[in-house]
Length: 318
Image 1 (cartoon, rainbow, N blue to C red):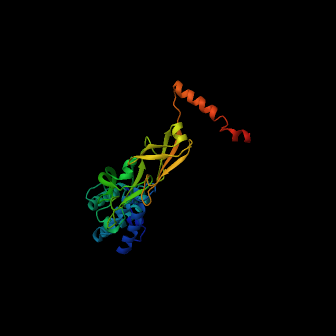
Image 2: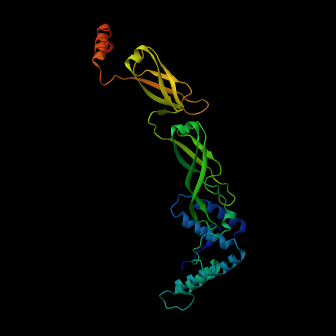
């Protein structure tokens, strides 16, 4: 069994003060904590550092460890010197391994010969704010405009007394205020990952997504609507029904309107302070089929408006 030099693991001298040992441990625990570190093998290093601190922070365990450490150093040196020479002096690796195993079991209570997680007192020496969590929530436009209450489930990391990271399912009832828009983040203080030691709990950030709507498009706070109108409504002007998120309204189509013309309904969009608008784009739509009477009227119109050429500007530029 490989002998572990706890002083070397913590990077302190063998005569280091208790305060120096604690300081070194806190620094390394923060560096290799699984919730913080991105380094390869960080979890194994975190366990090793916790094990070293558990022994060296206890005066009785440290004193016993120091004795075995001195014995182990001499034994390995003598065992190496006598290897292959038939020398019977000192300790063989098997003898040392047995003594070290007994030693580790006496310290760690048989929990794997020195491979135990950091003990419960590691939290007293290490404090870390819980991680912030992010969760996307999709809403219908009507829900975004009027507000809604939703139940969400998410996986939250937890650190047990031995530094092991687990995840548990957390259920929350959240209230979405009226007037939210796509990309907006709602902060729920203290609903994120739990803190370590005296560290505060992290926050949960809900990011708003908007589900596609069969009628309206979205541009920031503005809603977009393409509204079909007949040729005669566009030519003569009309009063027509137009949908909004809160119901239909009467919309005035100006006389002589054309396809692509935009009308703006103030305050009929999304958001708050200020609320966006509903932008209506007119689309002149011709019936697919005409009666003989309608065709006769179109022919009469063509003769009456024979001087009108909507492509005249194109011809002038070609």
